[in-house]
Image: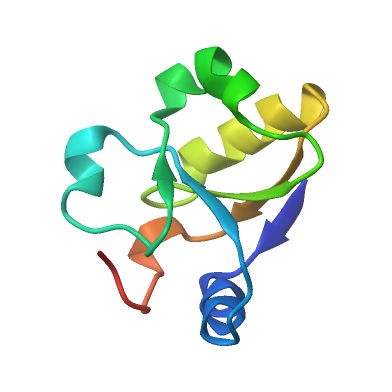
Length: 98
């Protein structure tokens, strides 16, 4: 499984990179703040929403601490998607939130 740190994600965003970030936390968790531009697909819905994702794009998976996003990353990887798990999750995120 490919991994990326929150610091690397923040650096890429600050450099103007266009990132596809999927936040797999529950809706109420996301309301407290998410990485700008992140799309919320709760972990329990990933299986049903995967057809909304483009297999030619790379996605960074995010959750609270890195556990749920690693499960989503493993699942999508096995389905042929290009995904990276953000280690440490939002607990380790020090960048802006929306």
